Length: 587
Image 1 (cartoon, rainbow, N blue to C red):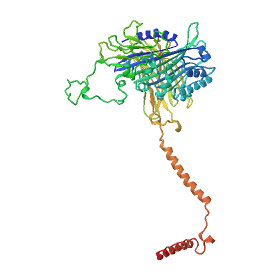
Image 2 (cartoon, one colour; image 1 turned 180 degrees about the vertical axis):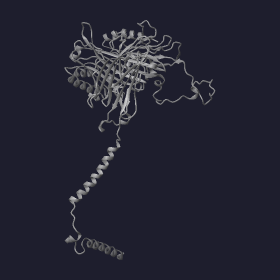
Image 3 (spheres, rainbow, N blue to C red; image 1 turned 90 degrees about the vertical axis):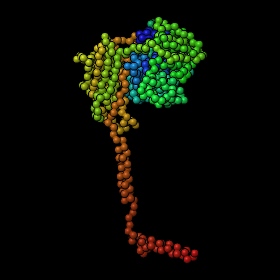
Image 4 (tube, rainbow, N blue to C red; image 1 turned 120 degrees about the horizontal axis):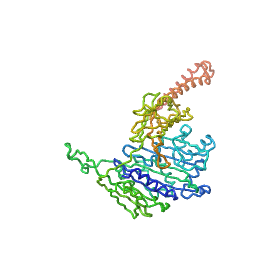
């Protein structure tokens, strides 16, 4: 399997060619254990600053460019993510985690403004316009969900000509990513999913993946002594279950195979005509792009720059003994890394392209680079008032220490006790915390912002714990599914040492948390309303009758004659009886 260093060399070789071209795209496939496959889609487009001044856009989407200009945004990073990356089984994260976000929606940007008030006003304008562009709930990123990171994020672009930059960061961990977000994402591409590798992106396959993330990064890139360009990189990473993805669309519900079609282990004593123990296959599963995505690649995007060496290619990272068949007239792209585990193919123009890997017995196993850190976070405690958070971070390296920044962005109703913050390293009494930044929450105004710069020794486990208090919300502040709990954004970890080979950095994120809060009985307000309305109706009716009705005695009415009201009623009854008696005699 291609080592992680070879992947970095591939990216370093391809990146200059992609940056020099106006638009380019490529697809990287990497088989993973447990019949999984990582597919990384990458799209790059550049636009000069002159085109922005003249409003003459060729490949850069005008809709996004005008939003960035209006909001004064110099650098933008937007993430849509679902699922969890299984680092124990799948190894190192794609792009070193730099193109990955937390569960839901994550957004951070560098905004140019004179002061913090102006920066926040432009930030709100940015989130509201991006909400309409991507059909997402980004407009709910208000002051309570916005922080200003100090140590975690570093700009990827060149900002020598910019001054008074403000970094703002917001998350929506409860946001559900769906096809409504994928469609605007594809419309930003020049070929809009009709040709090129983007023709494989289908909502039924993307959101059926075990893990997926969509990323949009807009950064300024300046050449030495040359003109600056604005580079937009769109990335889609997904982990597909090969067996699940190969299921045809007319059979959406997985059904077991008939027993006669299952390979059974006949050595088991309970093996019979109606009992079967399936044999574990030692072969690598076979698949093709048409099987996984329901269709082949619809040729190369005609707007791509063919001069770039890494542009318009489909690469697969697999051992050299693995057989690969190509169903197209595309030409093979020679490996520039002198490694036979990475094979790349140039997409043809005007004809379909399909990459087929038959089922094959392999003698070389899959080898993946171990991640530099692994992290897990969860909530401890019970009850409706207090709780605690515990984060466990492990350094698997036996020789190197790791320095990193740990970022927590907590909602205002989750109030941590900073004096209970503890960071302990297994087998060491020295505190691993080197620097701390803490900004407490203000009720209904802002959330808690905590950043820790720490160092973890080789082959050690770092445990971070702190206690918190749960606030009681107002009746109108509870969502419709209040008993489900409230989502807490994942923690963000950025590695400082060892540093990455590029300026994108090395990141990883924990899973989001589900925080249960004290929840009132929502039926009681309706009971109170009904009881109050009944009491008010009875009281109002009686008072109204007393005020409007006129009470007089029966003998005080002169028009009723002798006997009063009782005599009047008796006389009418007698007349009715006489009338009925006359009718009976007549008949």
